Image 1: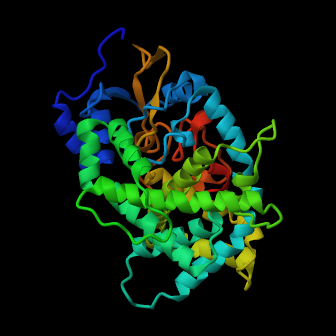
Image 2 (image 1 turned 135 degrees about the horizontal axis):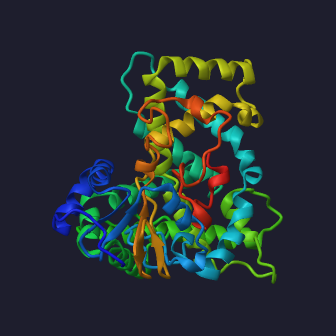
Image 3 (image 1 turned 30 degrees about the horizontal axis):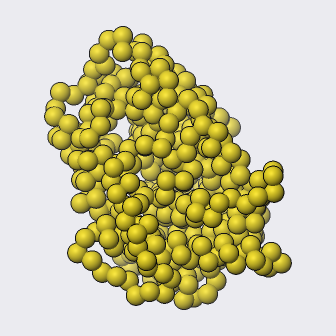
Length: 418
């Protein structure tokens, strides 16, 4: 580097603990103290350069897939090494091109009515005046949508099993011991370790859950059973093309490359597993924050109700009208601006580049900071205020608003996410 990037002098372990306890607050404090470019040091890695200037972030998002490397991304979630998140260069480009058509909004729109039905049933189950925790309810809703839209699971037994397995995997993966292990030994090493044990597990669909004193062994058995479900479904869909299920798994199982070949089965398993897991807690937590915001501001709730009445009338089962809900879409965007699901987007550059006046060598871990940019007073008027109107008739650049990431490696299912 041309000069030293400023950052906390705290030992890496203490920075890791502070970041783990309050990532948003930790990054805000570092930003205020060291400016728009600063460095943090976590256990097990050479450091991360955090970017808070949209001009620098724009440069990062303009990089091609060959200009970044993701195979050793320092995250411990063992989605599978072939998951699109961990692919680089031409492999990433080809994989994304293959995955995009089945994830387009027009292909997923048929599930809009089902989503409305599930949501209506959840609302009808609530008791007026009762105290109801949001997260468990929304977890269940997210799992219902995932099992139906991604897996095509309509059988109650299969859906119940998927709900149990995905929820159990997420609880274990997001546990304190696993996060601390990732902090101490690096997320990449923990992910490789978990993947190794998952490959060694012989658990099949329908096996009673094997309990273990060791968290990695239980995670391995859970993942192996989910993979077995996916593998059986892939085989079924390819052997019975006449059955039009229409779910994501079926669409991808039958999709072909330009040469007429299918995606390799294990690679496809990694994509389906990664999609279902990555879409679980992210959806329920994001929706929980959204409901908090709606209930905090009665005037916002009133406007949303009026828009629903105008668009739907007394029939709220026609999902084709959802795109007309402009104000509600703005409310969702504003909620995600203030409470993004992740404070940063991770990139590792594959070649040297200049950012913030510093020359960064290849291999540098870069974190465009979602939470700080989306509250930057030079970009957003009254950034701490909840004002959905700021998203009506105004388009913000991808370097100013990027709760789902940005550039060619942004969220693969972005078009059909809401």
